[in-house]
Picture 1 (cartoon, rainbow, N blue to C red):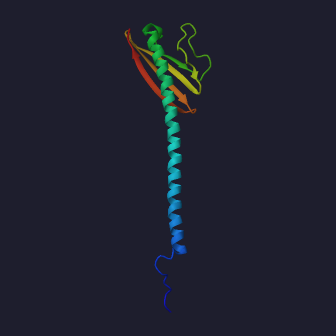
Picture 2 (cartoon, rainbow, N blue to C red):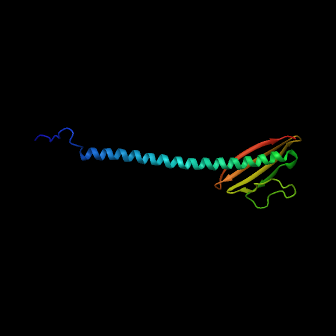
Picture 3 (cartoon, rainbow, N blue to C red):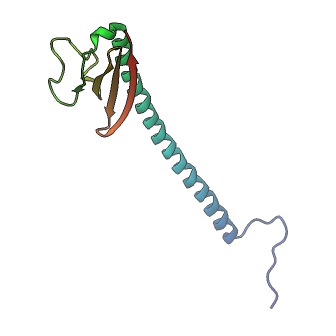
Length: 138
């Protein structure tokens, strides 16, 4: 028996159609997965950027207050714990202890007589954080 041949230009077989649809479906699912990952990374990037901006604002506020405003010694002000602000000095300044969803931990340390260090750790998503540090001279 001879195999049945189709005349040229008469269409595609069911098997060819199934293979083509499988390739297209695989490509679409891969593109959707990449898109979902990109959206997640973009949201994480926005969180990091906003947290960095909150910390930068804190450091700029401290910079405008000057060297004498920063308390001597090593001090830890944890915005995740209620009432950890130094009431006498009003240190650290707003937006401490938090700015929206971002909780701040401020550590001031006297390095020597003419140098103080301030580290600001901004927490978001309960465990993720961004750390900024600067030094102050009189």
